Length: 308
Ligand code: SF4
Image 1 (cartoon, rainbow, N blue to C red):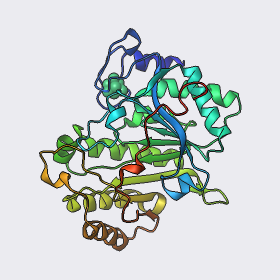
Image 2 (spheres, helix red, strand yellow; image 1 turned 180 degrees about the vertical axis):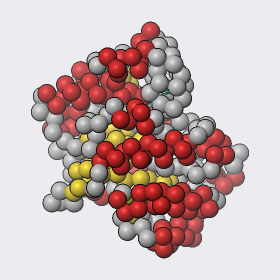
Image 3 (tube, protein in one colour; image 1 turned 90 degrees about the vertical axis):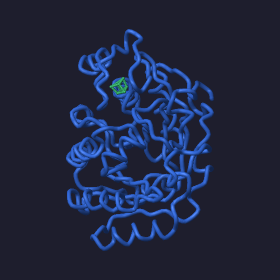
């Protein structure tokens, strides 16, 4: 492992939490992830990303366990806290990357990778040495340090960040993520710098570029519009915008009543109209009925262990 990445694990500052723990000595920070190995919950083809990511053949998703956020409405609770997944070596991770290529995946889609970047970079180097040629998709909450993303130059082709909140209060209440807005905007700025203009292949699959996702939350239309406005004023049509209606209330009651229901079609239509009026041309929207549990894949270790 490269020295600079190893240093990050010895004094972990991979994400804005800046815990400073020595993960190689077994210490755990906010996310709970270990240091030597990597915990992965699923590695399989996935067909429910944006059409230019999933295409017809599917995206080669690798779902990492643990997370640097604590979203009250998280749909992946099983893996967020590390309850699901298996610890694997960096060498096995490299094999998984190659297996995704062997399955015909259109890209390698790293889902929630931030806390495992040193191991992922090493696995990418090993896999590339053995013929990995897929575009790499970085699928993130957006809560990233721009300085760390700079160290990824040359490793990522397509950036797929969320931009969740404009409001500091919402970021703290719903995701325990202080400073989310400024942090995520600076991170996306760095992603746009690295990716440049969007590039697609002859089948319309993105090879380079940035797609910013915003999950519209029930009762928070004003914040959603402010988010789209802030993004569009910075990045215009150099990036793609994915406005998502798939919010699903968790199976227990939250203290914020608005989060105990789904998004209404009227709220979603209003957000789309707002984006169109702003001048957003490069956008993805979701059909009604996307808020189904079936879109959450089973975290059953498929593709994780050798021969699985
Ligand atoms: S990656 Fe985990 S341990 Fe490292 S700073 Fe972030 S939350 Fe803390």
